[in-house]
Image (cartoon, rainbow, N blue to C red; front, side, top):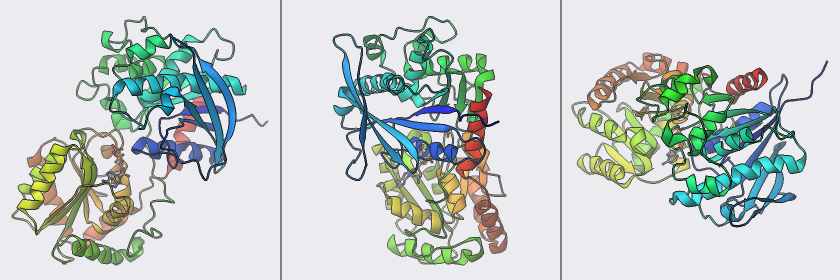
Length: 473
Ligand code: ADP
């Protein structure tokens, strides 16, 4: 007996290739396709994102499919929704004053963001009703779309929404949408009347989404455990412990078609696990480009990262300073916090022969670094999942990383990379020493590279787990 597919309304603030700011864009731009591509019982996933002003529409076939208003104190807010299709996936772009008035995907002014994302969350639900497409499950991601789950919870008496289940994926617990109280009230959403949430979280989007969700997914099993502890729980650990039966962890994947060292046109030489020596040409290109000694025997270390406190760039830089008795070079690619950028520049000026600080976002260079560097440093203070380490492993660059969150779940110490536990420069330096020693044994090093490249980080694995979770609801 064939059943009709589960209907999933998938909400995100960004999705590649429409608009991408960070890892969430990768996820929302891959997971819905991976779900629809499943061989067994693929769900009917439909993606809804805001029609950000940065989205280019020239090459898109857009159809206006719904026009409605969202009630708000002081006057209803008109919304228009456009539909397009991307590789078979229906994608809805929601526009309306609060979205069109904002120039950025994430505004520096939290009031702009709260108005925009509360409106978007409510409009995405209303869209389903206007289309007469009743989802079985609404799947929200991070604080920007979490309000949809709270609003849905409050509409359970409505026959259209009664019995619709909810999933909330946590890509980063620390960004909660604080400061949204005014917008929530204006759109008719009062604080939740329940003592299980801490007082400060009763009118904040992310805690409200967690509170309303039938299932909570952290983007790695370790992060799912960590967010239930004071160190990583951002004040919600007690609440999450109470809900632990609903919490699970599913690691993100990477897009294997895009991240493929045997076909990557950004690389001066492509390679496979059988032709690893071609990586040498990429390393030479990098050493030449950044004025480092051209020498295959010097280990080339790298970072490709947002320069944010989370990423522990300061820890890596301090660890490198402790290792000046060793032979190594480093390329630091990243932008973000000006203070952290300055520390990277300082290391370069202190060690110009060894270090290149490349302070910019450069997708092409990032690919060359993954393909040519020997090690990728990721001493993150916390890391919900992390994509860079998975990309690096696929490209034969071995991660030297802190055993936290997704890093712990995707890297096997001494088998596919090198892990350390304490968030300290001395401990990282000791681990780097271990990795540098391993690099000295060419055959053993290549065996680790091959093991890392043989890991399977494709989206299919994650999609199977999400599909099973949907079915369990
Ligand atoms: P996060 O999403 O927390 O920033 P992830 O490791 O999950 O970290 O994903 C980061 C992604 O952004 C990776 O694909 C990485 O290659 C890319 N990236 C980060 N900084 C840069 C940069 N300066 N230039 C190019 N790509 C970058």
